[in-house]
Structures are given as structure tokens and as C-alpha cells.
Image 1 (cartoon, one colour):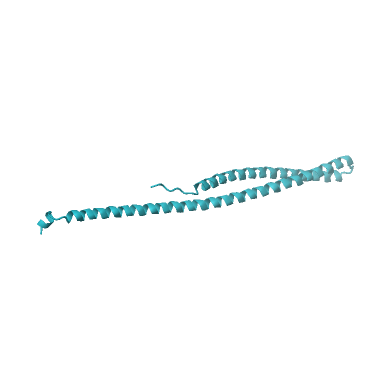
Image 2 (cartoon, rainbow, N blue to C red):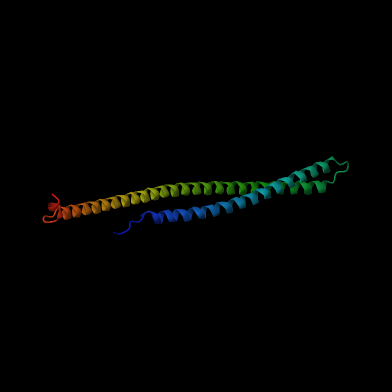
Length: 162
């Protein structure tokens, strides 16, 4: 008798490897997002510091217009950098969410396949038990028939004891 195999095993194996890949990719994306968020925080902190410096320059009794203009220009470039960095963080955050969704979907598909495999294995085990029971019944019937035939043959001790 040929052993039956779970016919969706290649798909299950594929989903398992895909899940591992997605987990690694998600971890990398999260790490990149954390790095970019930290860079954004640094830019925002620098902007606050430069804004505070600008206010202090403007509050001085002798205004240094060139220094104020340079500070305003630097502040504007910082705000542009912050805007770009915010967009980078937003895109990476969306990528993390997309990858997480892919991972969750793949995990759900893998779990469904594992349940199907468990059901398949349970059916194989039940079929094996039924075959063993049939074999035991056949052996019991054969032994009973042989015993009955041997005991029921004429000319043996059965008639002598009567």
C-alpha cells in the first residue's frame, strides 16, 4: 500500500518560507523607520534651537542683520529638510504597515494550511485504525473458524467423550 502524502505540503512549505522572509523584511523596515524617526527628531530639535537663537538675536540691542539673515536662511533650509524627512518617515511607516499586513495574511494562510494538514493526518490515523481493526477482526474470524473446524471434525475425541 502506497503511503499517502499531504498534497498541499509544497504550498505550506512555501508559505512558511515566505512568512520568514516577511518577518525579516518587517524587522529591517522597522529598524530603518526608527533610524529615520530619530533623524527627524534631531532635525526638529535643531530647528527649535535655531529658532530660539534667532529670537535672542532679534532681542539684542544691536541687531546684526547679516547674522539674522543667515539664521533665517538656515532655519528655512532646516524646515525644508524636516518636510522631506517627514515624508520619508511617512513612506517608511506605510511600508511597515503594508509589510505587516502581508505578514499577517501569510500567517493566516499558513495556519489554514496547517489545520488542513492536521485534519489530513487525523484522517490517515483514523483510516489506519480502521484497517488495523479490520485485520484484527479477520484474524479473529480465521482463528475461530479454524478452531471450530478442528473441534468439529468427525472421528476425533469429541465423539469419544459423549
